[in-house]
Length: 134
Image (tube, rainbow, N blue to C red; front, top):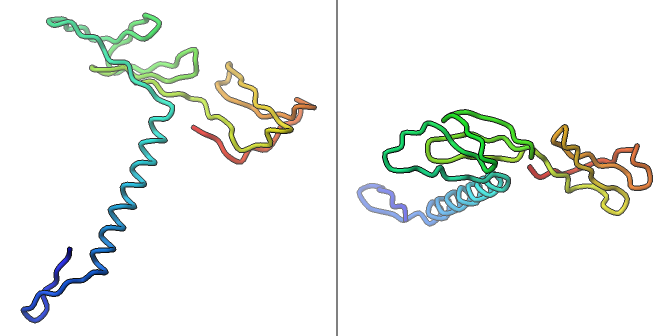
């Protein structure tokens, strides 16, 4: 509740209370959407540490070692970063979702790490896409 002083007397302002609550609610909604979108295509691998070991590298899921603070791209179209406590990997692929699924199909081009959307009857023709998920 917000209280204002006017000529030595305190007054409540319900409008200011509502405004404050709406701003807080709006901020939380935006934060929740941001966190959901950011984490939707990423994952983390904790670094296994042995007490007394001063290793300055990470080991990925394929057994490859990477120096701390290094970045690399995987064969699965992900970009990964090695940190002291974990490896963070995020997909580089945007997935088409806003297209005519009855007449078009999506095809993954691994060499380019991207999808194309083409007509089912004539794969030489591309289809328009109105929305992508990152």
